[in-house]
Length: 259
Image (cartoon, rainbow, N blue to C red; front, side, top):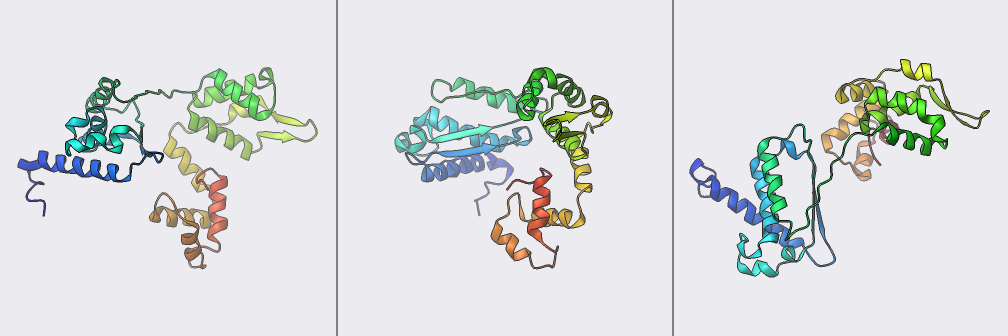
């Protein structure tokens, strides 16, 4: 029992307790030469409590004497360094509260190193340079193709990748042994369509998979974002699919899983 810390009148004490325990947890695993990396994705969906905990950790580095623990934390590994915190968010979905909390970090720049990286869309030249490098052709040869790719995807990295996978799988973009280079038909590329919604695009890719691969993905999704080989061995008894490894390999080739 938390002694009523979860009630409305004691929400603040409950939050402070969580911040304090999280700080103790980090201090227990920090050590010189063994830094800790924390990756926080999609911060635009985080609640205020999660952000307060994160800021509490950063503030303990910036102002060691104001830690939630004792003054001895001044000499703790967290105040000496050893933590790399990486957070990402979609600026078009971030609310005012998140942006205010992120701006607090800028005030602490004299104590902790804060770096902002803005990841934008790929430009026409970015796509042209990438295609030129990957296809082994001069940029003057890939310029028309890169223009088509840019027009279809508007430079969205995921769409660029999936669009190129799509035209390769359908033979629109293929390697010609006779010409000893990659070839394509600009008119056919122009007629090739792409969904404007990421979820629809991925759903269409999954629908093209065979039923064993789809079922294998469903089973793995129930386990979590990562599945060990030993776990797949236990599932590979013919009860679910004929061969889990082959089914998941098909999903990997489609870019739906990493190995």
